[in-house]
Image (cartoon, rainbow, N blue to C red):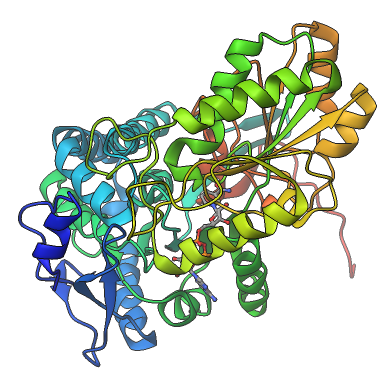
Length: 505
Ligand code: NAD
């Protein structure tokens, strides 16, 4: 358990009433792994183990899938009226909202996210449930008339047990993004949260019980990706996998799911460009591109981590950007004033730091470049900015997933587009210009699943969410999530003469 003296010495604060251990939740019960295996969960500020979590193996996944399967075939959930399911989802949203402070406290502690941003994510989790609660009652399906001959309609059905595999950045919110539509559509689920951050996921069980979700509809198996996650992906009774995580893991899951021909939704990595033209509102562009890469500790799939700046304003941009990056407040995750907290885990810290060192050989360091002053332990990284970074640099090409950004100059629109598209990824793009034609033409040509024009990353839950190229497969968001979690069966009814070419007369 945590050495509280060490924590106190760092000015760090531990939440009250931390659980003594983190268990699975299967068929309405908190349980340990069948073989008793556990793994260490670390506090990102001290890197000390603060709790043990159950390490799920395939036997635990089998039990969770069996419970979810029973709840699907024998339970009421898939057959409820949309309004009835919607009421449960609204109650879930109410409960999440009413516990937002506690959720944020635990999430911030477990993941190292700044408390104010964790609070925003908790509220967004509630909003995800509310959104799908509303959408499911407004859901309409197609009916087609062939005059005098046929009426054909779509019979939309939940699919079965959905396997939900989630990453450690904004864990609770990203879990809600999958749980909301999966449950709204009448499926039952097995959630496998990320092993770095299992704390907040356990809270779902109590919230769902209180909201009246029937037993067995929600199941949670903690553990490592290669064990619990892999068993879920390969389980024959799990026809759907919704995965958010690294592109490399996505490729592996794609291959492992292939023999079962599962439905897959993949939300993967990113290296998104933020393109700033000389005619942009520079103040707004600087504020947005600072927030775009340093919020959520830079551990953000849609981070604008490659800034491309038109030559005329390049020097001024770099100077102002570097100065502002140096003013971004690194601090303990629980402090209200903190803008960048601690990275999630020492392994991730080492990875980000290795890119910081690499960047010093590939570009010109203009801010950060190591540990921030006053933080001698824990996973703290000073907001780091590299200018003059060429497109072949690894720090330009590879997802770092930390508070590290590259800046690269360009001259023409064509050059900006070539640079923007010059990575394996294609998740988001941010364009800053006051020229309307350029804004639209550039947006439409850029290889990105989502584009924000003169805007930070502000989501509209009705729009498609997802990436192209190595950033993903399929889109969720709005009715697309409903489509992913349902089968659309076409039912054809003959109204006229039987159309019957007669064989064998
Ligand atoms: P990760 O791929 O290491 O892990 C994600 C989840 O997959 C974890 O729960 C992990 O245990 C599990 N997993 C790992 N190996 C597995 C396997 N072989 N079979 C089944 N499950 C397995 O990703 P991460 O490091 O947790 O998250 C960071 C990544 O997620 C970044 O690349 C980021 O861009 C991406 N991300 C994408 C989006 C998006 O919407 N596109 C959103 C958030 C994060």
